[in-house]
Amino acid sequence: MESEYTSESRQDIIKEIEKLKKEKNAVILAHYYTLPEIQDISDYLGDSLELSRQAASTNASIILFCGVNFMAETASIISPDKKVIVPDNTAGCSLAESITGKDLQEWKEDNPDDVIVSYVNTTAEVKAYTDICCTSANALKVVKSIPSEKKILFVPDKNLGRYIRYKTGRDMEIWPGNCCVHNRFTTSVVISLAEQYSDAEILIHPESSCSADPYIHNHSRIFFYSTSGMIKHAVESKAQQFVIITESEIIHRLKQLCPTKEFIPAGPKAICRDMKKSTLENVLTALRDEKHEIRVEENIRKMAWPSIERMLKI
Ligand code: SF4
Image (cartoon, rainbow, N blue to C red; front, side, top):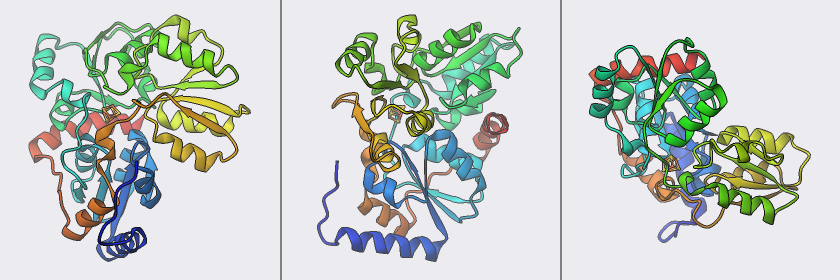
């Protein structure tokens, strides 16, 4: 997907973005699922965990976050002294929207002794009632760090939760949320792709709905990975062909890193529309006007920060 350029040429827009970044001491963080043009102008490209770490360590005064809103909120929780802005403040996430802070507060009140683990794809209010956050890259490590006698409440992604339960055997209650992109990847979809591309390695994200199917786990050419894990695997593997079962835009980065290898997307519907809301034009406007600012209320931020801090220490 490419944006349309009208009054200013693509190169002029990029030059202006670079100029404004220097003038304002701004940094652009972008997720692997954003448009290629955004990935290419970013200072840091990464998955949720990598971008959280960048938000924590940057010396910039302004963080321009290209992704979806919960990611910018997380950056604001981590770096309250920085101005966090987004190119389009309507970029939501079906997963983050599947649970509210009130839902989790009630669950916590009913289960006071249990440990609440929240996938980072949640709002600041949900993080405020969370004991520890995780991303798909560190979820197993986070869960293994919790004493084995403790029961875990995992929110909000049912597929990632089932994957963790399958891999760790932990006693977990799981919230029934899902990502509208990854939930389409059922066992039959994945097996059919594995049969169609019989020489390929199949790299699949644990937000997929077949995440706890033993048949998929025991398949010799199918590997579960976070987005950053997929990139590492593709770079290191001797295989030449890969089917990428996650949001398709990650293939832009994979092709840059492995130009001689072939990457096959999981199909035309493997697209997160909200991740495409950052464009060169609205990045330029956001930097120029320093909008749209994402700021988390201080009392919520103070409640939410410990759950992120515990994750970043793992
Ligand atoms: S890909 Fe799924 S989890 Fe990620 S932002 Fe889009 S809807 Fe949310």
